[in-house]
Image (tube, rainbow, N blue to C red; front, side, top):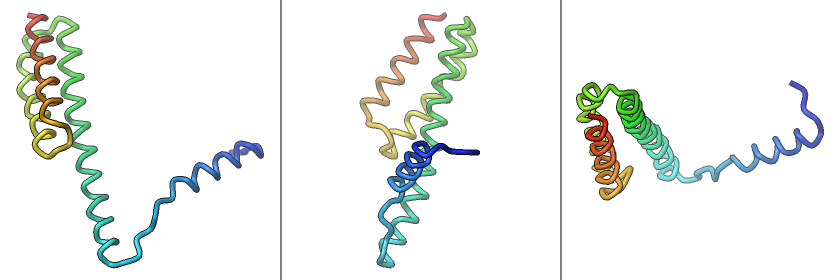
Length: 108
């Protein structure tokens, strides 16, 4: 891939901005490792929650209300887990569940 002078400069500047502060002490290194593990876990949990919600929305809008109602408990479970661990706030979880339930009820 060939970069022009300005593209290369922008690309280099962007990469430099991505470099985070590197830990120096042993405890900071350990904290960074833990933080990375938690980040992956949280991203995965958030993705599961979003996918479940998306699936229900697709089913409800396509007229597959019975299937959407059956999948509703899985979405609720994913949302509740995200709220329990602090990934999203309790009110946000309640709002998401309410809107999904309302959508499924409307589709029936």
